[in-house]
Length: 288
Ligand SMILES: NC(=O)c1ccc[n+]([C@@H]2O[C@H](COP(=O)([O-])OP(=O)(O)OC[C@H]3O[C@@H](n4cnc5c(N)ncnc54)[C@H](OP(=O)(O)O)[C@@H]3O)[C@@H](O)[C@H]2O)c1
Image (tube, rainbow, N blue to C red; front, side, top):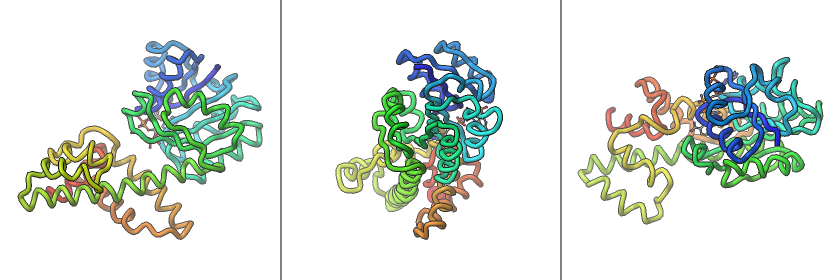
């Protein structure tokens, strides 16, 4: 298929790579041209100077940028993806953004006969590189049917959750769960250390029981070692939590623990931990 991919960051670069490796004809755009140049050198295909030019003639256009404003900048406007897309094509946004911006772009796309799917992902950089992401999708059935087989090149689970915005709402649930979970893990591990247990041994025992989790399995050891220079950055987490908290205020859904953990992340940022992994919450307890 003729495809386009806009935004070759930590996530977008390997995701677009999977599409090229699967044999699709991929045209890319990246704001910083050097990354697009490197991508074309590695994977072939073509690069263009604007989202609109890259999107021209593509059956499906994928994008993965930073936040709501970036989504608007890349999807809309004179040089945005929609300006280059023809009726019947589909725009898929893998950015973690608000449900509101998803509905806004969905409406703008529908006005020109283009399908739009909000399709945030989880699984991190490793999931993008290994092609094992979870993709949570909001939008219309026909657009989903077109894009789903292609998203399978990097998604081990690709699920249509409901109308436009539902993908972003599902990702919010994911981030709300993570916030409470990581803080609980940080408190438990710090407690184990303070009471003089062999904390790694405690983790080993506990990991077979009801407190088991992906975070416990994959982050407990590095949290105990005070290593945070990898993974999902605190800055990104705070962007995601601000989206969750705004949506919760609108819908009157209480998020007391999430709001508190967001303040803890702010303190991690103040310590210079903006790019640290989200598991850095333990730093506040270990080094108060
Ligand atoms: N990293 C993760 O583990 C992870 C996991 C799940 C979800 N996500 C989400 O996926 C999205 C991308 O994350 P990432 O880690 O790939 O970020 P990243 O490495 O910072 O890449 C962001 C990409 O978006 C482009 N971009 C940003 N603003 C733009 C704008 N206004 N106009 C044009 N291009 C713009 C950047 O271009 P430049 O190269 O020019 O800066 C870059 O290609 C975010 O919404 C993030 O929350 C990330």
